[in-house]
Length: 127
Image (cartoon, rainbow, N blue to C red; front, side, top):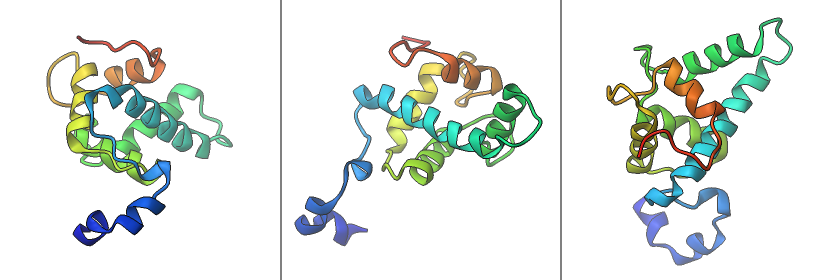
């Protein structure tokens, strides 16, 4: 809330988990947090008989709240916030999606999502 943002005492008590992710240089950190959130989702399915790619598809479907076959920046913000407690800005999430959106449709399809998850965090797909 606006009151929390203006209260220095509350700000001083915030943990690293509540530090806003807003700068473009934080994109790799956001990518790592998204990977962690997906791992949490996949791990919840650990006891299932599904293989890893089936569980990744289920994670993708969980992240795709609108069920349009794409993970949007809003989906990234929602899942990272709920899974890690980090406050992620929409602009940082849009930058991450843009970095991996190979077909420029403003979202990550399943293939792009897998590319992001399976990549080295230090390398981004698009420049």
